[in-house]
Amino acid sequence: MIRKLDLLFWLCLVGVFDVESHGVSVMVGDSVTLDSNASEIEQKNEIEWRFNDIRIANVIMGNPTYHDYSRFKDRLKLDRNGSLTIKDTRITDTGVYKLSTIISNRESIKRFSVTVYAPLSIPVVTSDISQCSSGSKCSLLCSVVNVSDVTLSWYKGNSLLSSISVSDLSISLSLPLEVEYQDKNTYSCVLNNPISNQTKHVCITDLCRLCSVPSSDEVHYGGGTEAVIRLVVTALVGLAAVAAFIVLVYDIRSRRVEQETHR
Image 1 (tube, rainbow, N blue to C red):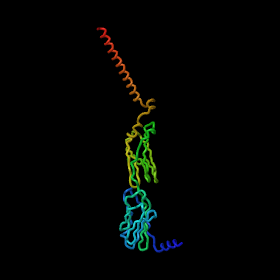
Image 2: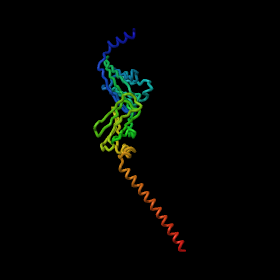
Image 3: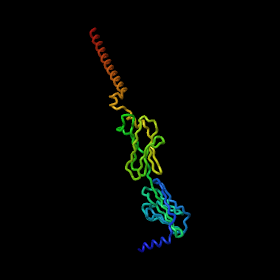
Image 4: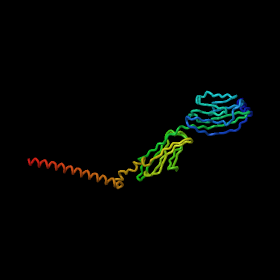
């Protein structure tokens, strides 16, 4: 009961105004500054920074103090304006940072929703030979692993063909695409998040080369007429060579017998 009365008494003395919210994105390993947008701190001003409701730094009477919080050890820096810099950011630094500034018994609150992103890997594109259609189609699959808050997309030139997005951590993410194996257009698979992207350009001719080879059924039923003709011609040439060899051997033996007879 006493604590509730203390809280009500404090709220009566200190007015709250200028509640702001900001979204901030940063890459792992980079530094990020959460700007207070305040002029130089005066001796009578009080500033406090909290991370997910845990106090991590404050300034009283012009003296900055960093609290013993192992997550940010030696990585926090307060400037003369009360802005907070986080150095060598990590994925675990993702969260809500709250800045409370008390000036003339009035409190200003700012919230920063910080998201730290890991570097993106280049997507891997493979062709699925088992999915080659009987016509001229080729199935491609673009894949990535261990990603979160990303979008995976297929492009034909600059035109978006399809995409898929995930917000939570995903062990793997894949997006299929069916193309003509003789297609000469430029295709690419793009992985992106709010601050970066990685692109894999695709050569349809190379990836779909095996899809362009006629199947055994196509050869049998006339789809590979040219291949059949080549096989027949090769066989005939082989038989002719064998016959010529046999005639040559017979001729040599006949001459030897004839020579021995004359002796």
